[in-house]
Image (cartoon, rainbow, N blue to C red):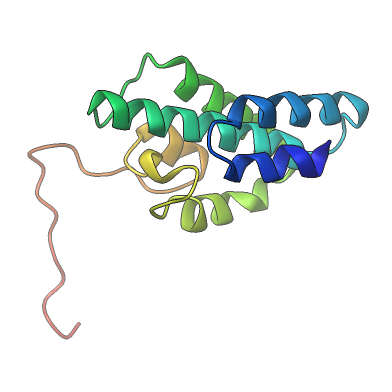
Length: 129
């Protein structure tokens, strides 16, 4: 069930099944966190798909966004060191959390610095420093 939940993350239109198998596995082994990461990834992909279909950059009221962040937070409680992997590898194009890179709540969760507010200028270091 754990591996099926993982592999279904990569099959079109099987994210709901990925969640189902991952949650079933987690019920059997509640102290593991890999399946919780899988569920977070599935919801994240569903959110990114949702944004793409709507043509939006963000939807703070999305159920999929909310569940992705809740499950990610749950998984990171067990494996906090994994935040670096999530923030550096899972946010690149084509990965589960690619549309979360500019999400303030996500950035806080994976310990990325907050992005500057709109209209705020960022000072650049002089060339060669």
